[in-house]
Amino acid sequence: MIFDRAMQSHSVEFIAGVGEALVECGSELSVAPLASGSEERDVEACDRLVKSGRIDAAILCAPVTGDHRLMSMQEQGLPCLLFGRASGYPLHAWLDIDTTALTRRAVDYLISLAHRRIAMINAPSDQYLSGRREAGYRQALHAAAISYDPEIIANGDLTETNGFLFTRAFLNLPTRPTAIVTGTTESALGIYRAARSCSLIVGRDLSVVAHDDRLAAMRAEHMDPVLTSTRASLRCAGRRAGELVLKLIAGQPADTVHEEWRAEFFVGKSSCQYHDQADKKEGNC
Image (cartoon, rainbow, N blue to C red; front, side):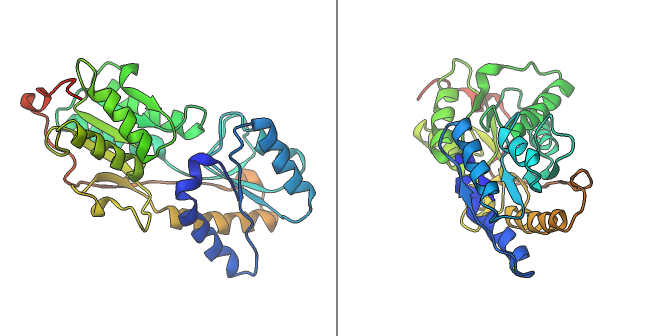
């Protein structure tokens, strides 16, 4: 299994799911965290793994646009399953969560609560899922005739630190957003912290919707206020990824291994109807 720095905070849950599937058939899992910051060095590391003869297949997490790691493995004939997708590789196998639909569901919900200035904290722009999330965001805005404003879009690793920093920047704008959508509960914790630092109350002055990967230590229902969220289990996705990569090893053609999961939607206490008075505290951080 190969993942980069953007996946590290969620890797344990996914690895556990993959391991559950593999251990049942006597297979072993090797984990390769690639965080060099250099595409060339990461491709070289993948090449070494393949040429070592120690692996029969690979799972590549959080692929980036034009991912040369995938190209290298394909060229060497190694079965590879993507968790996510990558453009330009029509024959690759993949398992994905429909991030376009879940993001649109989150933004549609906020629009139904009369929010019109909705910010988004998204994954790094070179990740394929980032474009899919932005597509869902734009679809919801377009359907509601709301103008797209790049000033309230931020891209970066979905960590608590970035959630805090991006939200502070949003809240210091002349007209701050009244709602924020983001891709992880970890990032949402940073949004909560930034709101408190600006004397705003989440669920009253600022609405927040995030994606909940159902991590054991960080779930929407454990947050205060309880987080409104889209939900899909990363552990279950890992288990299914393990099952699918075994199918590839057994000879199933890669272009027949395509699965897309839909997320559930849960309404918590972090979202509220927009009222004019909620926007009185502007640029006060």
